[in-house]
Length: 92
Image (cartoon, rainbow, N blue to C red; front, side):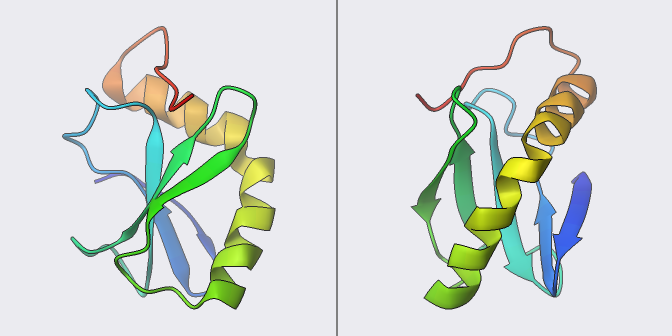
């Protein structure tokens, strides 16, 4: 499970067995959990919440979503490097 970075108390990561899905990240407070919030990346540099299973409060989730675009290219780069692929599938 590659850990990417933190935003406050929230860890941003992806699972090592999800390379068959479009690029996405998981976010949870205090460390990785199976019920982490899932966020898709879009090809235009956006982010779409797939689900909020970790129940991040809306205010915190809004802040995370505002800060994620700064990390867009880093996330894409790490996904490609980790899964050893040349092209990324995006959510939309």
